Amino acid sequence: MIDNVLVPDRSFARLASDDQIARTIKALEANNIHTLIAENGAEAKRLFFELVPDGSEIFLGASVTLEKLGIKDEIDKSGRFDALRPKIFAMNRETQGREIRKLGGTPDFAAGSVHAVTEQGQVMIASLTGSQLGPYASGAGKVIWVVGAQKLVKDLDEGYRRIQEYCYPLEDAHLQELYKLHSNVNKVLIVNREIRPNRITMIIVKEEVGY
Amino acid sequence: MAAFLNSSMSQKRTDTAETKDSMLDVKTDTALLIPNEEFTRIASDERIERAAQALEANKIHTSVAETGEEARKLVLDLLPEGAEVYANISKTLETLGLTAEIDGSGRYNAVRPKVLTLDRKTQADEIRALRARPAIIVGSVHAVTEDGQVLTASFGGSQLGAYAYGAAKVIWVIGAQKIVKDLNEGFRRIQEYSYPLEDARLRATLGVPTAIGKILITNLEAMPGRTTAIIVKEELGY
Image (cartoon, rainbow over all chains, first blue to last red; front, side, top):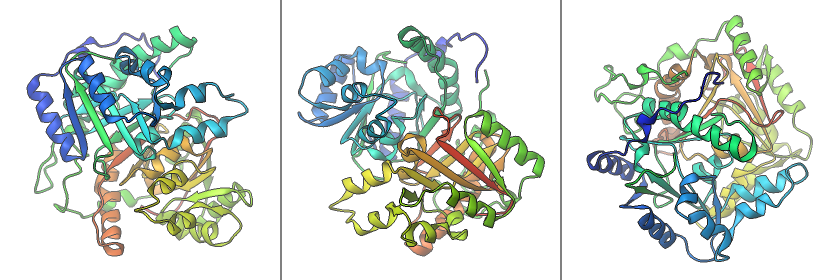
């Protein structure tokens, strides 16, 4: 889809002001997305684990944010949770496609990050495969998003530009380094409003974390 | 790099009592729910062909049906007897008799009738699971751009997961009035046409308003052969 040189537009790495954060939280709450604020990554991690009881079944979307905060390791390796991602990775994509699809589709918890949050409280998530979009949209019992404050944008236009001009080049480089694969903005989910109150919680971190 | 949602997305609407910054503001409640009939025009053969080719390039296999009857036949050809099939709530499927065929004929392992026997309060988890990952989901969408992008809006989002990834196969039946120039026009179509009609339907049947809770944009299907679109040269659904 994109053919020219992939240079991320660093203007999207700037943290939102406290004013913008406050405006965005108010709008998110009005859209039934419960929002917490963390001063730093450590506080975000603490808030995250207060939301997930030991033993919970949990699916993590691929997320640099969760990796950087140590949340991914804690979920996948501590043994305290029923972590779905390691199970899925142990399966054979060719022969067990159906089981993989079913296992990840309706977890009790889905967690990850998003790519943009507008001042009207809309949330945008882009994906190569779409595997995390179903649990986020409706499949998961509860959803937790950890979002660096650089991801706050004015509106959907700016959010889409953020995905194309910043997230996509960085994710493409990330995937090339990890798997020698290219990324693409194949599917985008826009959440304008959650119909089930208390289903989605967002933790906004006042630090640049993830992209 | 193209910014797909260009400036018209954020232009203020001047035709409603409440002007909002975003075309997608879901809180425009009852301000003005008159469907914009410009979105009922069936696309020309040339535009249908352009959209079909673009969809194919985006790995969404596409057939064009001359009539609803032909579309119905194409869908049924894709459904093996006994297959687990979820027929999404869709005016298009109802009009073509596909809802009745899938849910009522007994020839399929139909998901929707099962969901309806469950209790929303005590069996919400089972309902969520059944809807999220059917073997085959059949439904419609709200807009297809000439670049082969597909827009689907939803109140609760239950079909979006199945469309995006959860279903092994996806079949969309799309009236040719749903073809739009680009994403901006697609968002306008949802807001100005699909939303008022769906709102009226829900108020009439269940006594509640709707909202554009979630929107899925499909730019490209990662799994070849997974998604099929059937464009019908008739005004079908909304």
